[in-house]
Amino acid sequence: MSENNRYTLITGGTEGIGLELSRLFAKDKHNLIIVARNKERLEKVKKEVEKEFNIVARILSIDLSVNNSCEEIYRFVEKNNFVVDNLINNAGIGSFGSFHELDMEKEEKLIEINIRSLTKLTNYFLKKMIDEKTGGILNVASTAAFLAGPKMNIYYASKAYVLSLTEAIHEEVKDYGIRVSCLCPGAVQTAFQNKAGIMKNDKTKGLMMSPKEVARIAYRDFKKGKVIIIPGFKNKLLVLGNKLASRSLGRKIVMHSNKSK
Image (cartoon, rainbow, N blue to C red; front, side, top):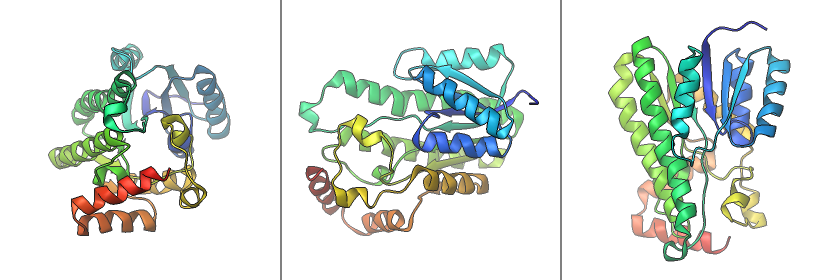
């Protein structure tokens, strides 16, 4: 197993889309820095990808909702003189409920992970990539980014932030040779819904894409430098339909949909 100092850093890389992206980067011989909370799962994924793909996987057990978590990542990279070629901001959480009934302590964690940590990591590593004149950043949002989201209000708003930020940065740095993309999947067969307190009905479950398929499309289009990546024909139709419809109709449809979950 050979090692160099160049790595792809993936947050939330031990399950779902993040895990599948970890495997795809490893398959192409990218060494990995995988960041997640669960140390046991980190150890398991490290062993799996190193054995299967003959790469080096570094792991960091960090809760991105905690203050100074991003600084821990910076210190780890700087101490070891690693170069982060690709940053995959995949970590994210959701929540469900009417805004006035939400537990704001939990919502603050959502904001910390979905917005604050993503923003800080992007800012820090983008500067390094510009100095190196190479690199790529993939921020994971959602088709929720294109809509207002009654009953999932802060989650939808956080993903709109991610999409808007990513598009703006892409435009700013495209002359530096840096790829900046935003992945906007629809519903995916992961543990996300259960963790957010969402119970999907059988009809909705049937429309979900597999994390492997989402990651495959994301990886392919990220390598091509596509700015907004929407996997799946039905999800593309959903986004197109939202653009054509009024915002008031869009939020009413989401309200009806989320009420039935």
